[in-house]
Amino acid sequence: MKDVYIVDAVRTPFGKYNGGLSGVRPDDLAAHAIRDLLARTPGLDPSRIDNVYFGNANGAGEENRNVARMAALLAGLPTTVPGVTVNRLCASGLEAVIQAARAIAVGDASVALAGGVESMTRAPYVLPKSDRPFPAGHTEMYSTTLGWRMVNPAMDPQWTIPLGESAELIADKHGITREQQDEYALASHHKAARAQADGLFDAELAPVPVPRRKGDPVDFAADECVRPDASLEAMARLRPSFRKTSEARWGSPRPEAGGGTVTAGNASPLNDGAAALLLVDEEGLRATGREPLARVSATGVSATDPQYFGLAPVEAVNRALAKAGRSFADLDVLELNEAFAAQVLGCVAEWPEFDPAVLNPQGGAIALGHPLGASGARLAGTVAHQLARKGSGTGIATLCIGVGQGLALVLDR
Image (cartoon, rainbow, N blue to C red; front, side):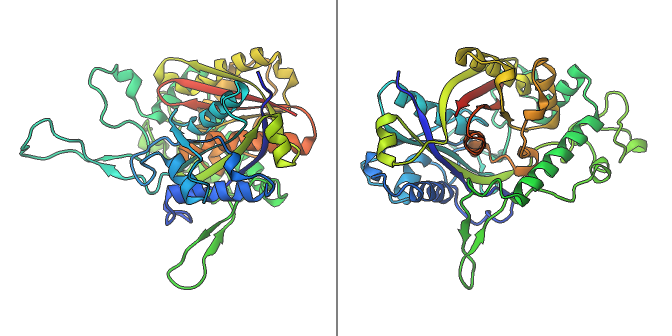
């Protein structure tokens, strides 16, 4: 098996729903990330790229027709460079990185691009086709932005509950309070704001020129959902989004027994964005003329009951660490996607040997955003850049995945 290196990793800033990137197509976002990534390695002949792997969770709108191939063509890569789109829902971007690394490790490729993209703003509404040739009456329209739609009636109903209700189940299981979730979310915003101010994201960001009706395009240059002014008082005023609390307790951070704890403040927002990484073997590394950010060490995947999907990273990380011959004590950083604060805190509760001080040191998806198909690639790139700044160490990128899966990637420097 060949060693696999991450040479570089970029991402667009993440835009909020109907925000700064709402006017940019997802295939254009992906193409922009690819162009910026390759511009940083001018010594690499693009014709040497063996494959482009891109993650996407929806695939129902402008990113249809294999967005990996569309983005490669839009980015100006030679038409001889193939592309494949992969879907593991929220971990699609990380799945793309892992598939690219695996192809290189077994000798099927020497140079590969991997990443992910999602525009949740531009996700379309869809209509199911009738099973009758001339239907009469009404039909239901589904939003493809997030979550279940067109559910198979044979599926166990407890598996198809809303994602936020799953987070409530985790809070119930581990006794995680509304206050703990809000405090975690607040810390995510503050860490992300500090990282922005300190320029820690600069090495990974590829600002997006956004066209205007008049005048030159304006660069969209920073993650749009980070709230430096976030406070516990403001979060406490938010109503639970999935379980109701009695009217007498609205605005209280302590809901009554059985009431809701998951709010818009302690969950990730809806977002738009893209990320891309350059992966190579030793021969490919020489062709780039660059020092790598990190080396791929091991991966782990797991599955669990769908209604507890948020806890699936626990076993995925355990398996990845075991394959890498490492322990939690060896970790310099663990980037765990923050779908919900309850989900993150639930995972931490099941890792008794884990030191939370190395968890998401630059904030996470609650602050930075979670454009589904891009998030896993963002996490891998963020870990690689942190290890490069440190000069050595071990890090993990991991995500929970709807319908009960977890995925993890171990990187070394």
